[in-house]
Length: 85
Image 1 (cartoon, rainbow, N blue to C red):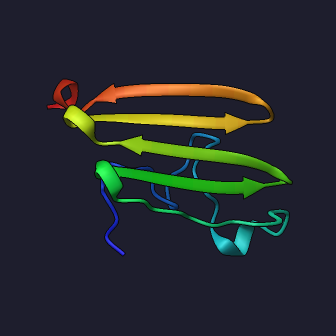
Image 2 (cartoon, rainbow, N blue to C red):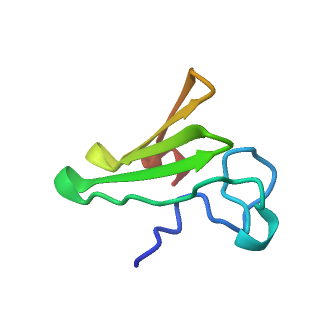
Image 3 (spheres, one colour):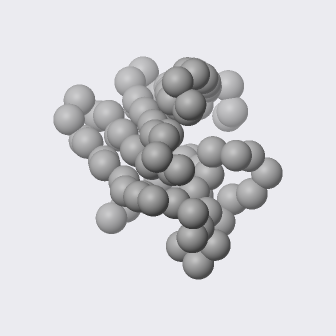
């Protein structure tokens, strides 16, 4: 599977939203990644501690939209790739 270098990697550290290495996540009840390329949209879903963390990455108009649903609270980060050039 192709991994977009602009997406958070499993080896990243410093934020609480990146997935841990499989050897260091014994408390995760379930972890899975669903990637949908329909409409140029990539959706990453990670279930942790019975809760769900949802990464929705939309590549529309050269923009990345991260929608993270955690513990019934929703955090949305919208970054434009044009700003990083």
